Image (cartoon, rainbow, N blue to C red):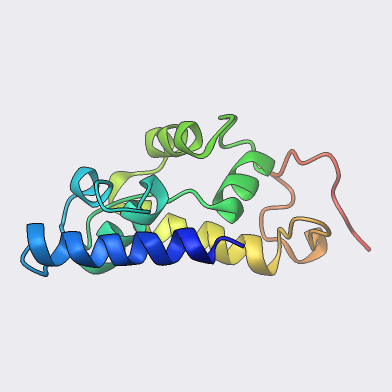
Amino acid sequence: GLYHAKAKNLLGMCHMLTERFNSVIPDDIKTLMELPGVGQKTANVIASIIYNIPALAVDTHVFRVSHRLGLAKGKDPLATEKELEKIIPREKWSDAHHWFIWHGRKICKARKPLCRGCVVVEECPFKEKNFE
C-alpha cells in the first residue's frame, strides 16, 4: 500500500538529482537526506556503499541484534546509531553494519533465534535464548 508514496518519492528524487545535483548522487549524509524519501538509514547506506564514508545504518536487524547483545539501549534507530558509534571504531562502522545484518538474518532471528549456532552466545545477555 505504500507504492504511491514510494513512486512519488522516486520521481521527486529523480527530478531533484537532475535539476539540483547535475545528475550526481550527493556524497554527504546531510544532503542525501534532502532527497525525497531518503532518511537517516538510507543516507547512511548510500554514503557507506557508494562513497566508502564510514556510516552505521540501523535497520531492524542492527537494532535487534545490538539490543539483544546489550550493546545499545536506544529507543529508536537514531539513538541506537549514536550508541553504537561510541563503542565501534569509526573505520569499522560500515563493516559492522553488514555484520549485524548478517547475524540478524542468519542466527539472531526475530522470532526464533538460533542461539545454539551463535558465536557470541556465552557473552549474550538475551534472556529468551533458544537452544532447541
